[in-house]
Length: 436
Image (cartoon, rainbow, N blue to C red; front, side, top):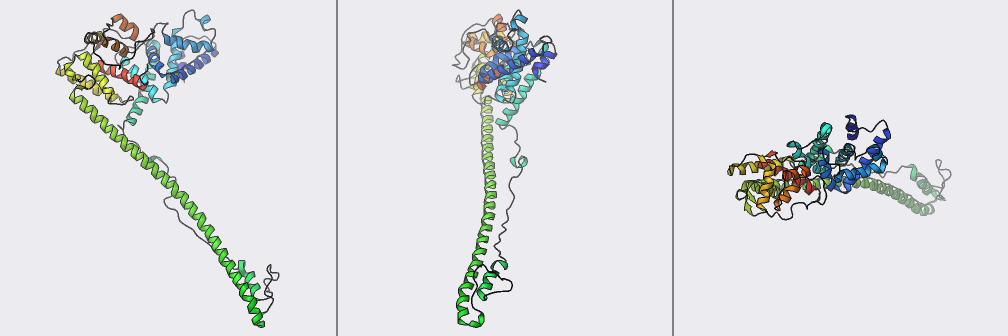
């Protein structure tokens, strides 16, 4: 059953008894999913809209979805006086399911975007809650499985255990060049006498002389017998060559397949060794970074920074050490690092998320171009967007925080939780190549 059908079954939207309307919504969702693949940056606002049933109907994501629905359902606005938010949201949710199915990068974008809001209760999915949570959990499983595989954090199944052997262990040669007596009998008989009871009508004219004619018979016999022997030798040699040729060709073919398999295995082994090396290197780099408590980007120790700045700097620094599609354990390394830093600074108490933004605005730290550009529309944005604006010195009010990101200003977060949230948002953007 499709996500869209499940949403209709729980009564999220009412399309009446006309089944063609459901088909139109399905077609629109498929078209929107294709749009996500062409413009993956849309995955982030689409995810945020899916998580919150209170997003304003003027959000650009609703407008984009409505265009695809209107292309199929011309009378949509005749049926709905206002923009049908829940209907469009259903199309968006179904499109996310289609776009992330079998696509680890897209699944990673959705998971990294949704994980922190879900974990900290900053979603308002309404009646669609169980369906959306199942969808998000599914994207997390897809992304985690692929991330663990790519980073070499899980053992791979050996090719020898999974691939059926395609070539035999050995190939035996069966060579033959044998000829039969009947094949040269006529020639021998013809060389020996004018006729023979078993060869009454020879093809080749026989020896015209009988053996009792002495020299005359001998003169005829020698070249005829020589020709018969040459024929026998050539016939046997030809058959031997043909037999050897077939067997050698088969042997070389089997040997070629074995060599191809072996080269493929060697190549995979080299890739796995390289992956293992890179995985070990990544873990060593992350461990070194965590123990040093030093920010390469700011070139200062984290304990010399305020916790809001240290949290953002640590999130940025960790993204330079790990791949964009990283396992969940990576974000927890960041969390444990921030917990240790908080213990050093005697400041591990939770505080409102707005306090972190105020701290960033007061510090006005230059993080370079690591943050997304300020949007020119009213689309729902991830917390990272407002973190970037605060870091540049802009004050973010509680109202703006709630209206633009859906996050309550009073939400209590530890510095570890705040850093992990920022890190996940960064990872979502990295999977988009910095877009979104």
